[in-house]
Length: 332
Image (cartoon, rainbow, N blue to C red; front, top):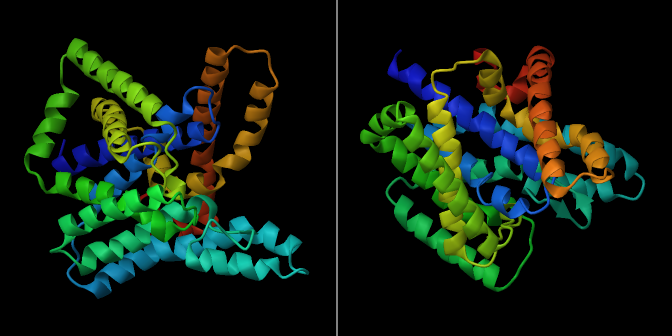
């Protein structure tokens, strides 16, 4: 197995398992939301940073970002908001919705905005900053941390993707740092072949730490730029939680399933539309007489089914509207 394939498989698993936690988090499982929200978004910025490298010029960076993120963002955002715009065409709220999407706001003047695509908008901003200021990445991370703390102290709620960058950029830079370390691949290889007993112990430790720390910190709402009670507790839980996904992924590295690769490469489609498939299972579970454990387990398996259901949907999107998958479409 070549090194390229080795890296690609575990990254595919990280994106797929990460998307599973995104979907499960939107089920708002009782007693588990703080745990899931501690890491389900940070892990994607870590992955994005790991996969990003300095381009030869800003022109090359812009061209790649345009095809892979900017064009898909606007197409998917306007498709998602189309129903709202049509319903509010007469009262003029549709224009506020357009402005919200252009500016990366969750909502603006009570109008529907970019929704889950705030992640993509934030990533676009980070990509350009990363390319433009290669010598100031550590300083930028420190400034963002300070900005995030100040923002949370004032309890502001701008619901703006640019503000969300304050929490996201340090994770992106950390993932990029890991990619620059030659020993990281050696660590991957060792963890993938680690004794099962030690691996389970390490995984259980990360789960216990993440759950405990997130319980103390309360639910982090990264989509609002909020980290809970403490930035440091949030950061620690985010890293131990991301380690859960990482440990599972490197262990699964030898399993190169086609549906996992499709799910990984088309994750933007799942990100935007998965809630539409969640309404029925959430309603059924919430209206049932299940105990908390059984209800959360049912929601978890429902989330897994939704994730798998998007594999054929992604294939259809590749056929009828490949532009929203960017240049990743050719690899699906």
